[in-house]
Amino acid sequence: MAHSWQKIHTEFMRRIRERDWLPGELIPSESDLALELGCARVTVNRALRELAHKGFLDRKRKAGTRVVLNPERKATFVIPVTRLEVEGRGACYSHQLLQREMRPAPSDVLTRMGLPAGGELLFLSALHLADEQPFALEERWVNTAIVPELMALDLSHISANEWLVNNAPFSGGDLSLGAFKADAAVARDLACAEGDALLETRRTTWSESGAITAVRLLHAPPYRVFTEL
Image 1 (tube, one colour):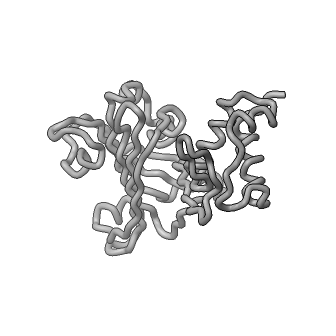
Image 2 (tube, helix red, strand yellow; image 1 turned 30 degrees about the vertical axis):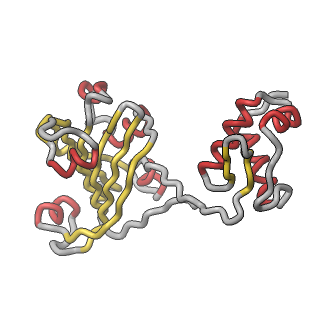
Image 3 (cartoon, one colour; image 1 turned 180 degrees about the vertical axis):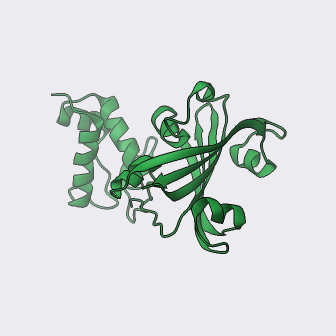
């Protein structure tokens, strides 16, 4: 009976956690595991690669695969859809598109995205609301060479955040969190006091074809970030 790689991943994870496969132990070969589980070798390979990526297995060519003695867990960050965040809090979501234009991107944005100096990107500014109260202020630069479909999209009906999460799969990215003291313009948009400390999130994502977007979010207080370990 065929199995998905996710089910095999779950079974291998069980073997590691329950010490069927001991730390430092050489596990069976891919071909032996495929024969045992009645699946294709490529399916076993996919599951093993995922566990190696997560730090549970050490795979070496010609030396086999071993359970890591002291696995380093990696945090998994899921890019949130702001609408779902707001609705998950029991509030009614809406958003306002404040700015939309092609313009030269700042040098720090181009550096973050690995793009040459002097390039133009689509700049978007939007205010996300919960029960008509400010929730987050978003400033986003989009590489329309990678996602040209966004140029014709009506962003008054769907936010760039939600469209990109659903339509522009990313293969990598970076994330930084920091504090930002609200200036007069931000305080006005987020209905907070000038000088209030805000959580600032900066995120850049890439696909195999190149940089997709760089976004800066300022969150109205109070706000908490949740991720999985």
